[in-house]
Length: 425
Image (cartoon, rainbow, N blue to C red; front, side, top):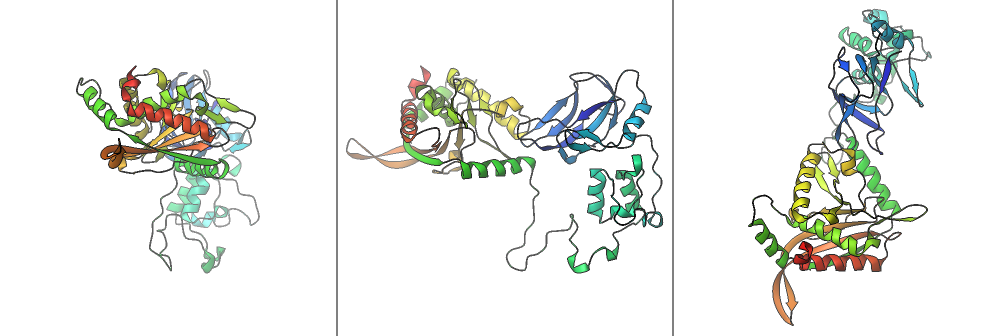
C-alpha cells in the first residue's frame, strides 16, 4: 500500500492548518528530508519535510486549501516497486481511520461520468446518507447545490470535487422547494448585509493565528490572577550611551529595545524568582534566561525568543532581534524560535504609547509593558528639572510571583536602565 502523507501538527496549539503550496509535483521522486510542502500554521508558514522515500503518487489536498485538520490524509507516496494501480487500490479503500479523524481518499484512476441536471436531480433518495469529500461539500455549499442531487464518481459512490464542478458547469442549482424563501441563508460569498441599525461593515475572516490569540488571551484574562506594578525610569544616561556606542561603529545599530532586553535578562539573573511559571503541581523556576519579545505582524502578534539573553552582549542581542523580527513578519519563524521563553517584553513606546498593561502570555509568570520615553518635569536635589522618563508596567501572575518579588525585579531593572554602563560589565 502507498505511504500516507498526513497533515502534520507543527505547533502545540495547532488543530488545523492551511496547505499553502506543494513543492513537489505528482511523479516527482521524494527522499527523506526533502521539503514536500509549505504549511501555514496558527503562527507561521513552515516547511513540511518527507520522512519516507518513493514517488509522490497522488496529491489529495491541493494548493491553497484552508482548514486542513491535523492528521488528515493529504497525499500518497508510492514505494519502490509500486505503480499507479496501488493508488487505485488505496482509493477503493475509502475513508482511512486516522486516530478518530476520517480522511477521505480521492479516487485516482476512476474516470468520472459527466453529470447533467437531469441525471443528478434524483441521484440520492431522501433520507439516504450522503458520502462526499470535505472539499466537495464545501464547494457544493458555496454554490448552493444539494449533494443529494449528485451522483458520486468516487469509490463506493462518494461525491468528489469533480462531480460538484461538473454539476455547476451543467447548471444544477439548489431546488427552490428545499426551504422557504424567508428562511434561506445567504451564500457564503455574498457581500455583508447592511444592518437595520448601525454602520455598514465588511467582515475579515479569522486567520488561524488570530483564533489562537483570541483563545489564549481570553483564557489568560479569565484564569490568571493578574496584578500590576508600574515604575518610572529616567533614560538620559542610556540615550547618551546609545548615541556614543552607535557612533563608534557601523557594524551595529543599537536600539533602546536592545538595552531593555539586556536589562530584563540581567534583572532576572539578580531576581531569579521572577523567571518562573505556574503548573498545577509546582512553580517552575527557569535556569535559562530566555526572553520573548512581542512583534506585530500583519496576521497578529508573535513573540520570537532571544535565548540565553543574559549571556549575550548588546550587539549580539541587536543583530539577533533584527533577524527574528524580519522572519516573524515574513512568517518564517521556526517553532523553536517562538515557542517557550520564560518572560515577555511588549514595547509600544515606539508608537508613542505612554503606558499600558499587557496580558500575560501563559504559562509565563510576567510580562513587561514598555511605554515611550518623553520629556517630563522631575524633582532633583529639591529643584525642578527636565528628564526623559519612561513608564514600565509589570503584569504579574500572583500564583507565581508575589508583590515583593515583582517590586524587587523592577528595582533591579530600573537601576540597570538608569546606570547603563553596568550592563557593559
